Image (cartoon, rainbow, N blue to C red):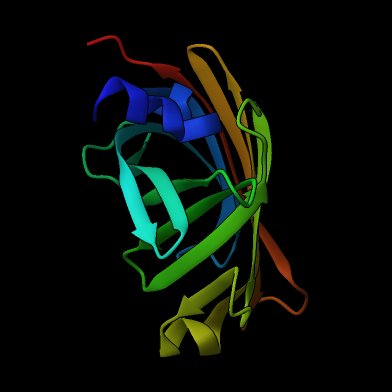
Length: 188
């Protein structure tokens, strides 16, 4: 991406590159034990810039991203994501579109300015704009009814706090599956 177009990434510009975090914490329902548990994890995310993407008079610049997370001491990732983080300067929004291999797709957005260093993505099940779509099995057994993720960017460090609210057959009330981590830029 030419330098002048790289500048068009707005608040996403500092994220271009590779990031790693070793102190992640996942709080989720562990089916094998039949209870809620905590999992510590390490994580690697790569963000590759692209753009522009033109939809009529909408002009988006973005980051193609790939994420993998590993439980401490394991070789194979227990969670992966692929997707895009997009900057819509005219609307003042950051969009995050991603899929996880269990069959959930999310398009979430956050209000942001070009120099924002913190923003919160939000999506809801069934929302035609910022929505969540899932496969039939998950819809019956572990439906994600809302998603929220706050991102903070500070130089060579960024962090997130994520809350996926689930309606699960194993739990009588809505369950907050949370993830958080602090990642640092990898200088390659």
